Image 1 (cartoon, rainbow, N blue to C red):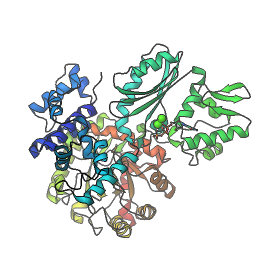
Image 2: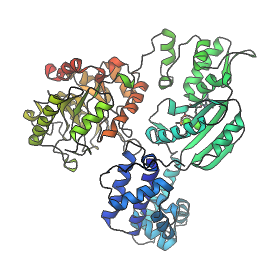
Image 3: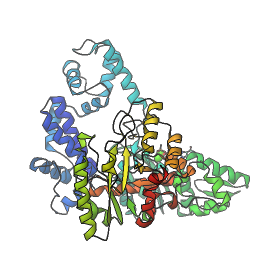
Image 4: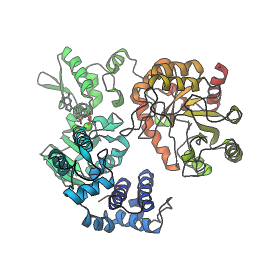
Length: 577
Ligand code: DGT
Ligand code: CA
Ligand code: CA
């Protein structure tokens, strides 16, 4: 069975959790946590590499002991060490750590005193009022825990698109090998490239349903079969993702794909158009009376109601149907339109690769220019650059550019926007740079008025070129800071600044809605990887998905410009001030 990097990372993460509950040495715990992150972020499939007998690459922070464990998990899907920890600690206990307010110490106390091992047992214990009297707990804590458990259960779990992607691909490849299968597509929010997905919706065109559903429910990674039948089935994978499957005949494939791609709102609007023409659309086809008049392809479904094909990313009932009728659908930006990337890090701050390795990796991804934008000194945890180190990096960039016509490095900085809206480095340090990327990394909790003023002031700075991850949100873990995006976008236009769509899968910031606002206001968006390692340029694909959901065309995206066309735009801010 295939072992994904995320699976290996999950085992390491669980080991760290259990060690922490056990009260192990903090360094040891951190080593497992860091390894989990490194493995998760690593661009290539480690298990594949190991099983082909290739040498394990050198991964930062992963020494002999952790590499041996990594190889063991990659080969067997298991860790003997974790199994041994589970002898002392039941598997479900790590889930308790997800409850806000419950750290490892408290989990251990709950286990030692009340033998609480699962969320259900925790819920029962707080309901019975047995938690308040434990050392260090009290009635307030008990009430908080009770609320947190309820909140945890009510929050339907969603998965980041980039998390779901490898599972979707592996399962698609597996299903494609079924005899009689003609097409396998993952529909639903996944196909619409939504930033998170609730589940995966597979649509398969095949001669026979049962052969496919049988193979589907027999998939190695299935932990639970939720329902099974001859043309449909639902399973849960070990990683927690639910997968729905529909098998359809080839003549219905387009109609089924359209139906299961959604969104629901788009489908309803399409069906309304069909009704007005005396037609009926369902997942089996387009019908006039009993006669099927279309449905083998999605194009045929749209054509039946006189519409051109509408790309999945637009199918949210946000005006795409009117645009399609008027012939004004956007020609959406594509990955191959990107000529460069304006936000990346090297080992000089918190990146993992050298400047030269980042340049080579970017060139391999087809990029013709790459801005090196390490952090500035205020971000000391990231080893941010002061003016002296920044100037040194400039010399290294000149040396690279002199010898490498294939890709040009731009001199930049991701400079901290301080609480008062000033920038973390003096003008003299910023002036020689090709671009200045401003970002907020502190004081997320300012009031809406102060946070907005802070950013507006930064945009006024004559050297600021680009506002990085404008809302600061981290999907699933940190809310956007409270800002007036409409004002920020208008201000950016007035100052000749640009806005970033940060393509890190947990950021995707700007959101789709903000992208569309920027488009409407005439502010160019830069789709940047914010790469911290050479493998991270693959994130650009997720930025493209989000940009397409925001109706962006090539012309709305800053880094689709050639370097010659880009350079004057990077100086716009100075001219405007
Ligand atoms: P998710 O899974 O929450 O990220 O979002 P979706 O859009 O993938 O929703 P899901 O998985 O519930 O259903 C997949 C698609 O199937 C959905 O986008 C539209 C279609 N669909 C499912 N149930 C209905 C329904 O009751 N009516 C209509 N019109 N479409 C439906
Ligand atoms: Ca879905
Ligand atoms: Ca579904």
